[in-house]
Image 1 (cartoon, rainbow, N blue to C red):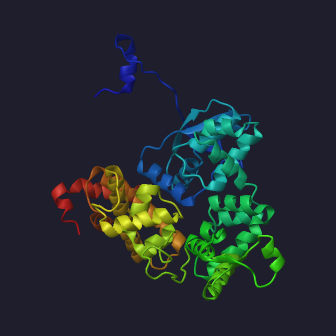
Image 2: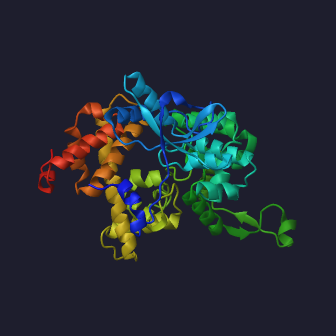
Length: 447
């Protein structure tokens, strides 16, 4: 059997353009980590996954290093390094494959940000990395080019660091999303932290565990605003019983039917109290199919109208938190007519196909999440989502190569050793082994 080394040796006699780039095998003790240099916080689960990979003799990508006066510093591969330390503590002789990193300090930071081997960056970690590059004298456009992101993404993350200690702590604790934190800063400035804390307490009082953008920055119901305009347009202009002099000058008083005054004042009171958009409102016109009861938020559509209506809205207008009245009405009309073959509204074929894919994915995710919740009934929502994401990743990988339903995938996982479920590498290997043992015909009989 030939290999790349033999092809390289014979390159003078062939038309190959093969070249080499040296890597080196170093003992774990020959490397060092500079305190505070790594942009990622060490994730112990990720470290243990690399430990298991080293012990199992699996391929682990080389570390990027820089030779300094203090020794050989790790630029990228901190989790691999700590995993190797654990493997060494377990009695295994580990040597790490390393390669030189060539470039400036900004290049090194950008490399850590874009490395495909590291875990996904948290928003605050990405923001700190961008700030370090900014401190090197780089403009947002230059940073964006280095890290292969948009200028808006760079500016957004840099602004996150200006949101104050209280709001940053809330982002770190996952009580508020980074995008919501930035929106609060733009809206409230230095008061953003106290506003967020107040709104979070209100959200928790209703049973929620984190502050959504809709809760943090409530918007008045579009349906109620439309009703107020209708009432004002229907009002008659006439002479006021008092102020005859103003009437003689052509100034009229806006007269509202007494039966509608209570309703007008109720709407104004709701506006002043800051009722969130999409909150349930009492129906004003019971004869209107698409009026006060039509949900305008993503959550409201899913809860009140179902997956099909949401899929229609998301396919046509994009998956977003709030939909204008016309967009929500379009989605409701489409779904009420026929989700698969609407006739009342015009839906392009590609949008129809997209809606069907979105519906299927949403239902499958709900099925998988329900199974995960049943397997871990004592865990909180954050830990459940961590486990759901792990199983979801394996499901995507498995179903790319082998056609199966989500129920069949779940049945396949249940055949693996439960001790593998908390380690994505071991779970992936266990599922792959089972898939390799069964034929396509067997897939239909799983479970």
